Amino acid sequence: MAACKNKGLTQAKVAEALRRPQSFVAKYESGERRIDVIEFLDLAEALEIDPCEVLAHVRRLRDR
Image (cartoon, rainbow, N blue to C red; front, top):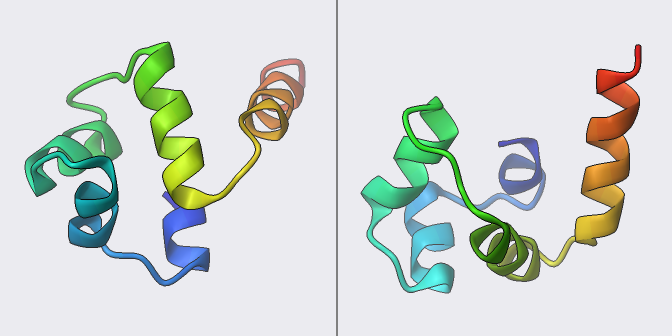
């Protein structure tokens, strides 16, 4: 995930911030698992990013 790399965060650090196992992060990064809305909001908070900006970016990519 680009936001993690930009902040120099490992899967282990993100998992720690989310209070989840590292495998949780690995599974959604690999596409093996999807995250729900609440998990998305928790992830955005842990990464200190605006979830609305993320969704706007995804929408722009989708509309190409």
